[in-house]
Image (cartoon, rainbow, N blue to C red; front, side):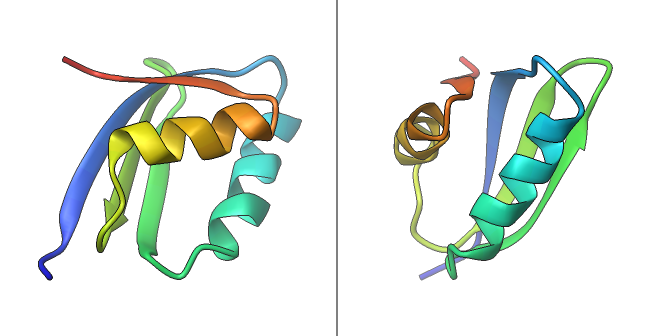
Length: 70
C-alpha cells in the first residue's frame, strides 16, 4: 500500500481544537504525519489506507467539522 496525501478543509472554533486533532491522530497508526495551514484551515494528512471521508467522520465524532476538497 502506498502513502497518500489527503487534504481536507476544517472548521476550528478554538486553538484547543488543534490539540484535539493531535491527540486523536496520534492514536491512528495509519496517519504518518499531518499539518494544518491555519490561515486557510487546510488539513494535510500523510496516510496509509485512510480516505478523506473516513477522516472526516472521525473528526466529526470528535466534534470537529471537516470536508473533502474537490
